[in-house]
Image (cartoon, rainbow, N blue to C red; front, side, top):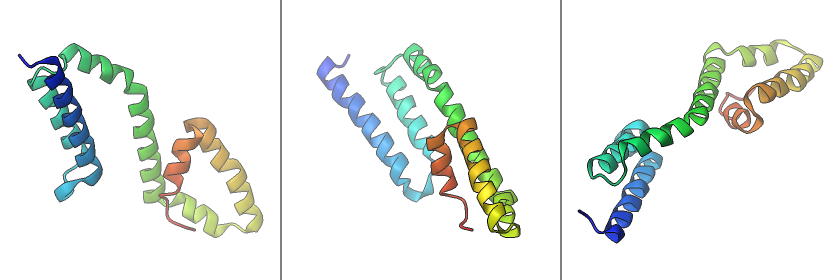
Length: 125
């Protein structure tokens, strides 16, 4: 059994390294493996219980669904190129209508911050 001080230090280190590796992505390993590996390590060393891990996952489920929706929306928009076509085929007045109607509609539907971040990843018009 680990002492409480050592357990806290080990827990903080594993979390910090997992997040750092997720951000750095060495060798282009997807983020899910770094975070998943950190969680499995925390569970394997019994630094957190399975019940606590499941509870934390449940509390974060709405955020996860929101982020998945934003990524799907961005990917769909960039693959279909519908926004690019809409802006390129309409005149100045049409662009104004799209920017005043479509963007606020997306913001009210999905929340402004996430759409703003995802819209910046779309190709420039």
